Image (cartoon, rainbow, N blue to C red; front, top):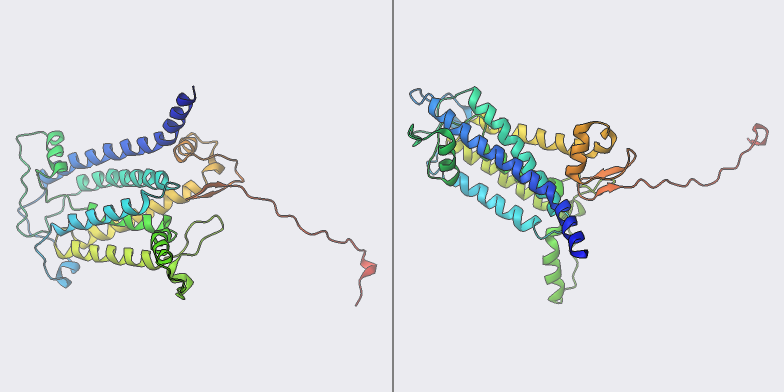
Length: 314
């Protein structure tokens, strides 16, 4: 009986994460299908469009580096948040969900408008022998490569979401192993670094509000990635700009919605997301993006002596 209860609780805990993963995979595959369709109708016979970023940045032909940039960003996300048991389910649930939304938006974008191919000498190996759903599997595993799916940049979306994960969920916990080793070595000297540099400021419910040393490095890496994507002619500058802008807006819009979910619980869609986020409480309950519901404790005011107007002294 106890084993059944534990199993049921585990299912309830990880079911939203599994739902988010399925949502992500559906739109990931949908994006791959639309990519093959967009690649077949792309105007390869036309020259690349004028682009300020292409004029300012020297051409770098090693475009494969864009994939390595994303792999490195993913690896550090998993290293950073997977060991943190208190928030890892929340982080990856929202990561998969927002990434799925962006794949859905990109599927529409690359299908409705076909731009010329920005990368010199890029030749697709998508063939007419297989249907787009079959070719999509080849694209996912890297057997096929596409050139015409440019607006907007999926690589930019991936880099930006990783940076936003650090910005939204990191509170300098990644320094704890180094501090532990520092103390184990017998070092007792304290660091006199500015407070704003080594940890972010937190709001009333404990969520990060500012950047700190690690997130400054993360965003520097992300911005360098943007420039590399443009320099390799993997995308137009507008593809990178829109990819970053839409990702940031979608990310913060969803997180702002999460903070007000309990106020909107009379709506069906809000109830779905309350289950998805695992929230409990009433409309007066504050929501922390990291810690979940936070009860608002009433503050007791000191007693005030009631006096009449005639008691005033001047």
